Image (tube, rainbow, N blue to C red; front, top):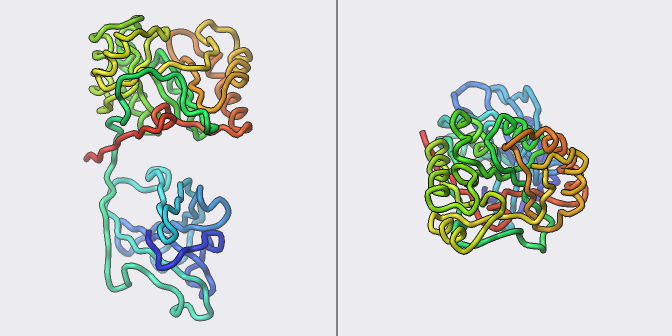
Length: 341
C-alpha cells in the first residue's frame, strides 16, 4: 500500500467506527459476495507492526465483531506499507475478492476527510489462490554447523521422523509461534504424507535425512529420500543432514550435486539416549548461542522426553531474547512458494 505521505501507525484506530467523523484509520475492506457482510483489516494500535484490527462489518457499515489478526507490518519506504497475513488465520479462503482501501485523518465532517481507493464508483478485485512451498534457495555444496553469530536467532531442528510424535511436536511449534526444520527419513514417510504437508503449510521446513538412515550415504540414499519428499509434498528440499553427523568430502559433494547444503549442528542434548526431560532442557538452554542450530529428534524411538522439554526450551530462549527461524531462514535463504489450483 502506497500513501501520499508517511502514515503514523500509532495514531490510527485498529477498530474504528468509520461512520464517525473524528475516526482515524487506514483499512482494507474485502468482500467475496456483494451486499453481504465483509471483512475490514485496519492498521494501528499497540503492537501495530505485529497485528491488525479485524472486524466483521454489516453491509450498511456497522461493525459486528471485533477481533485481532496476527500480521507482519513493514515500512520499506516512508510512504510504503507492506502487510502480510496468513489467509486461513483471518477467515480468507481461496476466492475472488472485491476490495477497497479506506482512510481518514479525522475531522468534524466525515465526507471532508474520509477517502477511498478505488473511488465508490469503481471496483477492484483480485483472486486469492492457495500457494505451497516448492523449494528453497541456497542448496549448494557445503557444510554448515551454525548460522551467523551476530544475531540472537536459533534454529530448532528435528531428526528421524516423520513419526507418531511429529503431530505433537508440530502442535507445540504452532502454539508457541515458532517454525522448525524437520530432517526426515524416506522409509518413515509412507502413511505420514499429511503431516509432512502440514509441516510446510505451517511455515516449517523439510530436509533430507537419507532413505534408510545410512551413515556416510551414497547418491542413491540421498536422492531417494529427496524424491519421496517431492512426490509427497511437491517440495524439493535444499538441506541435507547426514545420519550421525558423519560427513566427508564425498557426502558433501553428493548432497551438493542434488541441490542440497549439508547441515549439522552446534547444540546436541543427546536426546536420542533418553537422558530425561530436565537434562534435555538444561543442555539446550545452557549451550544455545547466537546462530545455534539445535539438534533434537521427533522420531527414531520414544520421544516423549524431548516433546515435554520443547515448550520450556522455547519459553526460556525467548525470555533470553532469542528469536527462532528455520535453517534456511537462519542462513539467509528463502523458502520458495508457487500458486496452485
